[in-house]
Image 1 (cartoon, rainbow, N blue to C red):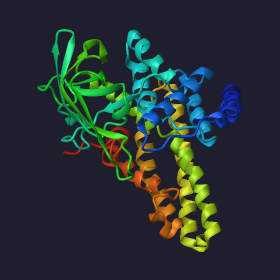
Image 2: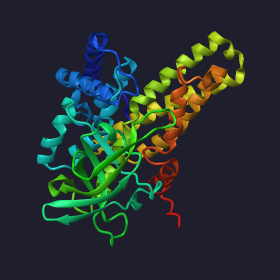
Image 3: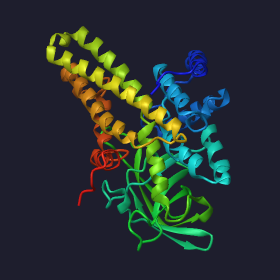
Image 4: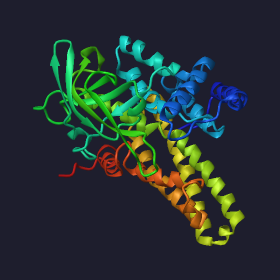
Length: 377
């Protein structure tokens, strides 16, 4: 498989690098991590800058390779992360672009691209654990609306979101994977209550969301009724296939910084640490190549990442944890100081084997869909 870029793609890379070098020094300072309204405004402002420059549509209106180049170069340049735009740009937007009607694409995609609206992810539920298809949030038809009752947990960016990509059960008598529907729910609808959750790192990027007979128009359904599990697999393929690309680049940068820090503070003299950092360097180089392979495959299958994203997500989750464990080794006693670099990253890395599908779920997908092994009983 050819993993090289075409001359046109390399021209895009050069043009993007030149633009980033000009615009990044002009950006305002980032708000405090605890200032979620400020973070929303900052993230939407950056998205508007991208939109005005013609780079906003790379997440779904460009080839996977161009998308990969964009994520690689913006991360290398230290550009702002998507932040509050994460779900809209990397989950809901690509799903609507792939599965939505022309009217839905016209309604929701431009505001995401312009930085006008934020989305949150209403998938996980308190009683479902890692079995997403065990969700219980109910939706029943009442004329032109669905009436939704239930609750969601670990709802990313719910505190500042305008819309929610919401999974509901519309047929309780169907097999659990066949009675699910994908809805776009306005977060200001009557009956929606958001309760922030504080993480180990002190952030409130997650929330509980309680739904008490919330009315969602039927026209907000993406895909057919009871076909939501298939639509969800499209969403998750983007989440696992390309959403973490920028983070791989960031991890490779952190690894270089760790090596330099270890050389400066004397910990480089430990051969075990050097071997550990060397192995991680090989690991992240291999993950980058796997990302390129997944992107090349996506270009041949209509732009939607395949099950190879589960292989990537499984290994990346553990490699990230190992990276920040190594950072703690380099820092020594300073690794207990939350104000030091990489300490909060180490805390947040603990969630990666759970977020976007647990490692156990990814192993099942790899076993069944790639290796052809029988399902467990």
